[in-house]
Length: 276
Image (cartoon, rainbow, N blue to C red; front, side, top):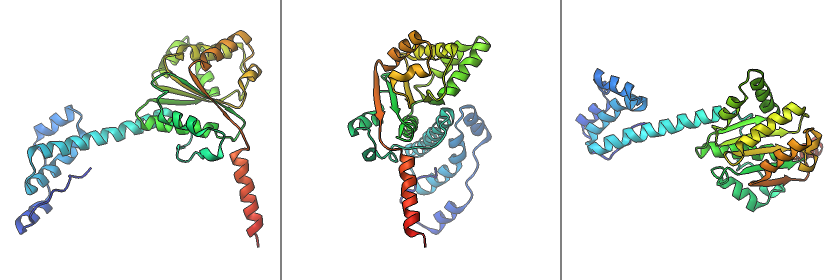
């Protein structure tokens, strides 16, 4: 962030001073800024001070410029770190989601996009056939949550269960779950793509039970809830899992033709129409 410009009367003297290389900070001040981890202030201070001297800024303007630059740099760095930590497979935005072409009611979309359900530790369950927008909406909400300052973690169901299995192998399942629950929102995509054995079902239940009323979960599956027995073989555990997952949850059923199939048909029609 460059120093903010201030109106000034230009003279030969001030022009020469403004174009001269700014004097470096004293060594002791540089060291103090390093200890305070004010990297942006340390980098910009010589230029800001030189500009302030020429343009006769008030002392508070110098301080404000440096502080605003440091805050902006830290916000940008924190956002980048949260995005990396989320582990999203792709970048999706809510603006790209075509609500009018989906089966998601506008009021429901607006409620989810407001993100008020995250601090309330409410869940989101997206259910529908392939290509109807489940993963797009899930990932887009995750990106919006990261931009709003929330810590988010995205995993497929297979990745989650694999991590829990590894934890069981070295007796660290509790630590694995605790690490996940340090996030404000945990998103589990592709639930039901592969069947689980009894142990996998128990591990998944343990995770959902630990998150219950503590953290928001976002879940997407192509199986309607009454068919979750297809991939959760232990009936009692599956019922208990769904009970906790659906309590305090927004359930969105996505329906209609696959967006990908629709786009493929459109491309085919255009190719046929314009092919010489």
